[in-house]
Amino acid sequence: TTEIYTLSLHDALPISCYQEALKADPGDQRLRQRLAELLVKYRRFDEARKEFEQIGRTLSSGGFYLKAIAVYKQIEKLFPDDIGIALVLASLNEQHGLSANALAEYKRAFDHFEQLQNYAEARSALEAMQRIDSHNPNIKLKYAEVLFQQGKTAEALEAFRALGFLLVERR
View (cartoon, rainbow, N blue to C red):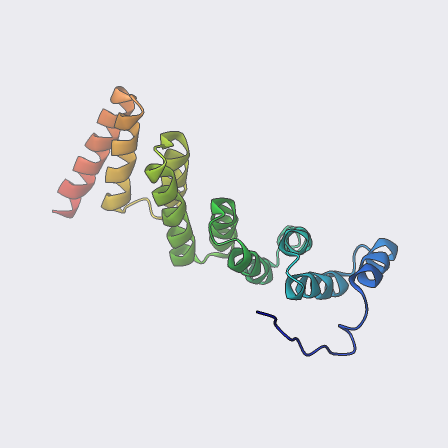
């Protein structure tokens, strides 16, 4: 099947013109955004990703977390199975104070790593989740289980004890 796109005057400019313009002014994020969108339109997803990631890094380093989240969501649409993007989104949401969104992204990463039996990465995701919600018994239970699966019995026992104390405290 062929797809027909309606091109605006800006789209008529070849991608190479945008790339040349960016060489002259690499800090022009609007131009970079336009180039990324044009690359997506022409299904050059890997190149678009590089541009979007550059925009996202620039925005997040400037403290514009919400805008960076929006950019990384665009990348996530292009690469839905890339768990690295979920971790970036989790971190950005955490930094911006969007705890529920951060927890959801970390949970997605945890599920992915647990399925792969990559317990070190699963543990890392759980540690991030505990940092956000330190009194969540479900997270504490999963954390203790992952420690046990890693063969860290002393740490697992301590984690189970902490969970027990939390549950007793909550009655």
